[in-house]
Length: 90
Image (cartoon, rainbow, N blue to C red):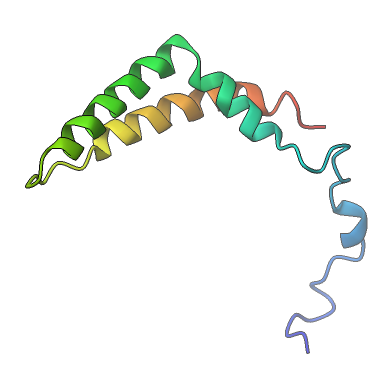
């Protein structure tokens, strides 16, 4: 049973659904992320994250979590992805 009144449902909902990709196994987002991770800017932040993870994993009693390094890396990667991703959208 649907609680959405029929006046609110969209009559062409099935027509608005995106057409399936030619290769359903490939996600362009993953490919673009991988390419962005190889850029000089992202490599710098990835190295900082890996150094932090190595430092934290060698200590038995630490409160450090590498959150800042992770966020910096994800921000740099997503900034790169944002400029490239929507060029692939139809």
